[in-house]
Structures are given as structure tokens and as C-alpha cells.
Amino acid sequence: MDVHISLGSRGDLAAQVYRQLLDAILDGRLRSGERLPPTRELARRLEISRNTVALAYDRLVADGFLVGRAGAGTFVSADRVRARAAPKGVVRPRAIWRQIEEPRPMLEARYDFQVGVPDPRLFPMETWRRLVARELRVSAAGYGEPSGYAPLREAISRHIGISRSVHAGPGDVLITNGAQQALDLVGRVLIEPGACVAVEEPGYPPARQLFRSLGARVAGVPVDAEGLVVEAIPGSARIVYVTPSHQFPLGTPMSLARRAALLAWAERRNAVVIEDDYDSEFRFGERPLEPLQSLDRAGRVVYVGSFSKTLLPMLRLGFLVAPASLGPALRAAKRLSDWHGELPTQAALARFIDEGLLARHIRKATREYAARHALITDALAGDDRLRLVPSTAGLHLCARLAPGVSVRPVPGVAVERLEAYCGEKPPQPGLVLGYGAITQQAIPGGLRLLRSGMSAAPEPARPLP
Image (cartoon, rainbow, N blue to C red; front, side):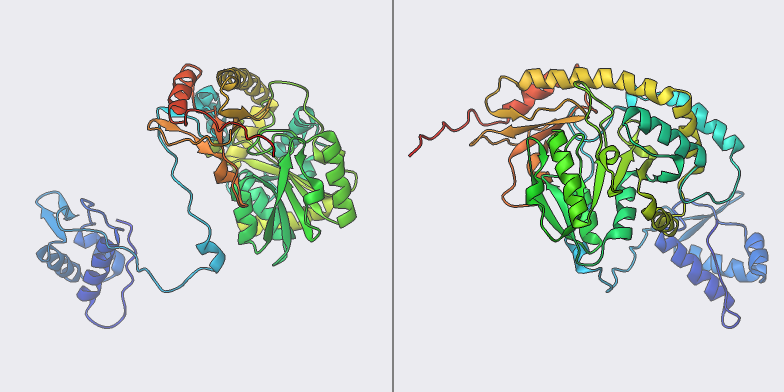
């Protein structure tokens, strides 16, 4: 038993032991069936007489909270004990937190088209275990640098320079617990209360909610076939959050002309662009365009990346690359947030990258995801109820619903609606289909079942007046 007991210097000591043990049982700190220490041992710890502890035990046994077993010891009763709930309290959060919904639990379905979930079966788990075990043996105790493990920052700077054309040295890289923490750190450093932050519409809901929680006014900016419509960015915005390599959730890349226009806008407005490059390493088509970060000549782009899609979400590893002018503040924010991440995991990832294992894994996974992407694209191409948004990268694709077409939930199929990614009214009807968690073999059956829940045909086009 590791429950803390602190006795006062006055009063009935047996009653104090009784009350604190009872509280531990009712709070769930002592669970049903758990063995208590012998009376002699607990008396020694508390520096009181054994008879005092025995009296408290006897009273708890009499009340039905403990049970004695000859030759085995004293245990928490399995019959009457029900852990009591913590007090509800009267303290209330800021109003914004009453508007942000708790995350929905991940659905379990035979046909899983959920978004943003890579296939764990493609990940070389045994190799990863070996690397982590090695680092656990050699890692020294103590705190690490807020920026992250230095060899990992070096490995990431080389990797993103080759794979994504990002211009960054090790000193420009800050390791985070996923892309979401990277956005949080940037927001803490840049967002003033009431500041306007522009985001894509439709776009990534957790980013929108995060900026609002930090006190920002969030403005949705429409996205067309070339990406974010720069002319529609509010004049008051000083931060713009975009996903230019693979727009989330539509999947279209931002054109080179639109990238240049966004950077020119940021320079004119003295603004910052947050570039979230969350899954662009899985590419199935043409050569990717240069990231905003490499086109930036004025130091206005903060580049955010993640290994949640390329590796596994449970690893919680991401990074950001920021202009040198923001480096000290971002490192301070990281230290105040959680000081640093798990050093053995960071060290294992550094070796994973340096030994060429990450590049090998990405090549293998890209081939598999390309096949799944093609299966879905070919299967839906002839359905006039759906209009696929062109996409040649990532772990999902989007299909807009034709006018008049609706989709009802189908048991056994987990799929996300485009409306869930819209922050403005009216929401845009459509489906967002992830293919990271579903096998090639399951895709045809899943799509047949999904289409069984769609209305028969779109409305006929109305003649012009």
C-alpha cells in the first residue's frame, strides 16, 4: 500500500488512521481486494503503537470495508466498496472552454475510413522496440534541453531538407509532442488577446479551437482549387494557418502563384504564416511544390511537421522550424509547457532516421497507400452522387456530395463528413475518407456498404431563368 497517511499531533490517533484509510478506500486509492500492510509495519511507519493501528483495522473490518484472511493478511473488501466520485465543485472554466467539445472516442467499425490514422501493420515495430530498448539502457538521468535531443534535431534538419526542401539547421528545429503542441507553442508566443487568426475553411478543427482557446478571434477563409483565397484574408489578421502541401481536409495543393501571393501578403501586413505539413511525404503523383518555408525570404513562415502520420500517433513526436527571431521565445514556451519530451524516444527516432529506416518505411507505406488511394478513386469515379476532389498525397481524400444527395449512417462503416471540418455557415456537404486504417481487401466492400446509405440520385439541374 502506498497511500499517504499524515497524523495530527493531538486527538484520537486510531480515529485518524481509520478516517484516512476509509477516505483512501472510498476515493479508489485503495482498490477492492488490495492487501493492506501488517499492523506492525504500518505502526512503524507512522511511529505509533501497534494497538492503535489494530484498533483502526478492527473498526474497518466491523464496518465491512476490510476483511481479514487467516495467514494471508487484511484486504479491502470486494463486496461493499464503491469508489466515490470527486466533488463536482463550483469553480467554472473560462467561457470559451464551455464552447469547445470534448473529443469523440474513436469508432470501431468493420470498414474504417476514419481520417488521420496510419496503418500500424506497416510500421517496423520490432526494429523500433530494439532501438528504444537500446536507448533505455544507455540514456542518462536528468532533464533535457527544451529544444529536444540534439542528434534528433540534426537528423530532422537533414531529413526535411532532402524530403521536403525545408531550409533549416539543427538550431532552427524544436522538437514537440506532436503538431498540436507545436501550434500551441506558436500561439502562446504570437497571439495577443483578441488578435485575428485566419484559418482555412473548411479546415482542421483542433487548430481552430486551439487558437480560440488562446484568446484569438478566428476567421475562416475560403479555399478554392488553388488553395487559400488570399484576397479573402481579413485585413486585421496577423497570423494565417494553412496546410498548403495537402489541404486539410480537401486534399488539394496550394498553387505556386497562390503561395507567392500569400507570402507577399504576409510581408505587406507584417504577418506570420503557420505552415502545417502534416502528411505530404506520402505522395503518389507529380513532384511536390516548394514549401512556403523554402520560398520565404522575409522570415515570416513557421513550419510545423509531425511523425504521427509517417510513424504512429502514439509516439507523439513532432517539430517546428521557426525564424531565428522567434527561437528564444519558443524554447522558453516549451520549457514552461512540459520542459522536454521523452529523451529515449527522441534518441531512438534519431537512429531510425540516420540508419535510413524512416526513408525505407515511407517508401513502403507510400506504395501501399497509393494502392488504396487508387482503389477508392476508381470505385467512386463513376458515381454521379459524389464529386471527388483531386488529390495525389496523404492518407485521405474528399468527395463532395452532389446537390440533393444525402448520406445516412451505415452500421459497420466509419466515415467522416466534410461538415465536421467547417467552421462557417452553411457547412459544405461531403465525405472525407481515410484509407490508413482499412486494408485494400476491405475497401470495395466498405464502399458498397457506404453507398447503400446514399440517396438514389442527385437532383436534376434546374434550367436557367
